[in-house]
Structures are given as C-alpha cells and as structure tokens.
Image 1 (cartoon, rainbow over the protein chains, first blue to last red):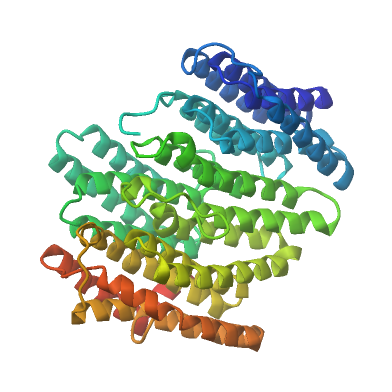
Image 2: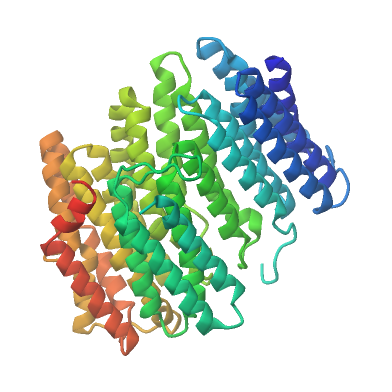
Length: 178
Length: 405
C-alpha cells in the first residue's frame, strides 16, 4: 500500500506542476494529500495521515472554487515541465530507495518528491492561484516528512493541515496595486 | 508565563490592528497593548521550560528568547519614533504579525513546524499589496522553505554520512535563502513598502530564524556540525566582501543599505560557523545591533534618500562610525569577540577577518551621509539608536546572559 500511496503523491505533485486551471490544481493537491496521508498511514501514523488528508482535501476544495478557469492541464509548451516531473521522481527515488538504507523507502520518497515538485511550481513564477496551491502542497509535504523524525509527527501534520487550508483560502486574484 | 501567549497576543494585536484600519488611533492603542502583553509573556517565560497547554509541547530557548525581546523592543522603538511619512498603525500591524510568526518559529516543538510557520509568513507577506506580482515576491523565500525541508529529510534518512552532510547543505542553503543573502539574494525594489520588501527577512525575522535553525541543527546533525560551520564561514566571508563592496559602489541609496545588511550578516554567519562561545556571542551582538541599530536607521534614511539629501554633519559621521563597527559601539565589541574566536580556532581566519573589517569604512560613510539633516523625531530616534549602540558596546554582558552565554 505504501508504494501505491507514494506513487499517488508523486502523481499529484506532477499534476500540480502541469496544471494551470483551478480544477487541475485542486485535483493535483487532493491526490498529493491522499498519497502523503496514505504513506503516513502505512507507516503506522494513522492520525497523522488523517490530518494530512483532511487538510489537503479542504485546501483542494477551496481551490476548486476559486482560481483560473478550467483544468489547464498540459497546455502547449509544457514539455519541459513533463520532463521536470519525471526527473524529480527519478532523483527522489534514487535518494530514498538506493542511497538511503533501511525499510520505508516510500516514506522517504513521497515527501521528498512532493517538496521538490511543489517547490518547482513555486519557482516557476506561476500565476497567484497556482503559487498558493503549490504552497499548500509544500506545507503538506513538510508535514509528511515529519514522520521520519523521532518525535511525534501529529502536531506537525495538524499545523501543516491548518496552514494548507489557510493558504488556499487566500484570494487567488492579485490585490489592487500589484 | 506560558509561551503560547507570546504567539497569541501579538497575533491578536495584528488582527485587531488590521480589523480597525479605518480607525488608526484605536488600532494603534489596542495593537500596542496586546504587543506589550506579548513582550511581557516572552520576558516572563523561563528559557527551556516546556508548556503543554495545547497538546503540543512548546518551549523557548534562551538565545531565541533574547532575540525576540530585542526584536519586540526594536519594533516598539520604530513605532514610537516612526519616520514622518510612515503610518504608525501600519508599521505596528506588520510588525506584530511578524513578531507573532517569529515567536511561533521560536517556540515550535520541532524544526519541521518552525519551517511550516516560516512558509505561512512567506505566503502572508507576499499576499499584501505590493508593486511586484505575488509569484515573484514569494519565489525567493519559498526556495528557502524548500531547501530547509529537503535538508531536514536528508538529515533524518538512515544511510551513509554523505546524507547527513547533504542535510547540512540544505539547512545552510535554506537559512541563507531565507535571509536573502548571497547566493540567494531576494529581488529588491527600492520604491516598495518596507513591510512587503525583502528587508523584513534580513533585518527583522531573519535573526530569530537563524538562531532557531542553527540551535536545532546542532542536535539534528551532530556528525556534520563541522561541515556546517565551514559552509557558514565560507558564505559569511563571501557576504562580507560582496556586501561591503556593493554597498559602497552601487548607485541606489536604498540598495546600498540593503547590501550593508548583507555584509553584517556575513559577520554573523562567520560567528555562528566558528561554533565557539565567543563566535556565538559576537554573532548575537551583530544581530542585536541590526535590530536596534541598522534597521531603524534604514527606516529613517528612506525619506532623505527619496529627497536625494546627503550631508556631512557630525551626526552623519557618528552614525557612519557606528555602522562601521568602531569603538565604543556594539559592532566593535562583536568584532573583537569574533576575532578572538577565530584566533582560537584557526589564526589565518582571524587575519582574513581582520582584513575584511576595513571594507566597512567607505560604505558606512556613504550610508551615514544618506541620513541627510535629521531633525525632530528622526533626530531623536538617531540619538537613541546611538545611545543604545554605545550601551550594548560597553556592557554587552546583560544581553549575552539573557541569551544564555
């Protein structure tokens, strides 16, 4: 299950990078949150997984309601972005499964791939709605990464869920004067 | 007193000041009251003591506590003696929001939560009205969060020592990106409002972020702490040279001030990198002097810079001396401590540091002139800044003791 969840998290992150419309962004964020939650759940952190899933679903629902119209998936000129999502996936897989040792490669892969993908989306200088969605995805990935820590991951997941929701609730249109 | 209040009261103050924007005096009064309550909560909290009121264990380390106290005092100082064209209630609103975020970063149970709060601050600051589009304002500080997040993941992965060193690279790169120092300088528009520009990252929020990241990194990366120190010293020297030369040679006055913050951060990074008590003491003194010296002086220089007024009166020269770190100002004591630490660690490093200290002179003379002919509130503010700087230079121990050194 953990491998499937990690793949779902990467796929969600990839959709986040490839989408320009609110529906595509919302689906990407929801899928990423489900994957990250599933990875945490499979690692024995059920409440952490639930918090991440809840935060991601609420944030995705908020994005579904506001932002650029439509899906905007893989628009013309998005080949470099497709290549980027594949390269990030492969590099994260190398670090998580090959360089690092021990069980739980999925718990290492999913947060790393999602942090890199959400970060790449933010660095693209995207439109405001896409940047806010990427920030929500980034904070959820940070929350999932806390599962690797020695102290409890639930507080971090709850904080991540709250921040992800708050970020998606911000207006997707530029304020006057920008 | 519980550290929760240190976060909640300034946050409530910022919320009140935002809600009462149409009535600036009421916003100022209520915000100031709640901000003072937050400061009292930080002062009365015991460093290291844990609180579990919310189901999350929160505690405040001594260095972060001292930095929060000085940041709150700097905010109060800037609001009371605000530049003539600045709205006090607006300054207080942004300052209290930043202070609440800084307190949350400091009291967070883990570095993960601190990084998440940092991201929340990044998102909120970029969401304010500004000249640049959102995506361009959020880019550089968001990169800091990404790098810190990756650094944390690498630090926790079981495997070869290279992973821990990659973790150290991520944390150092993330910290420098959060500050906006080289090689991750934030995009700067001299005409932008100070609150929505990169200045708050390097001059207000940055000191707390640096103290929290570096304090926690010592526990997180015990085997890579030497590599981390070497990276901090290398980046510190780069920022000293680049910041001083650029501050001297750049055409725009506001950009010169921004580069001067970078050069001060170079010294602080070197101090943290030394890893010795003297190094930390010197670095913290530099950060205190940024908060209560360079930041208020920058705010008071904004109007003379717009009016293109430059003067060579005695007050300008005294300010230049304070900015250059000459005796008896705080910068001098900090430099002595750094040189002592560098000598103890590796004497050629002290030689290099001593040589770079001369670079501050031309840029500081330029910055001192840029304050124009201060009068009224601006003159009072500059006099108080200089007095505080002298006091910190002559008697640094009370503040250093507050920081647990």
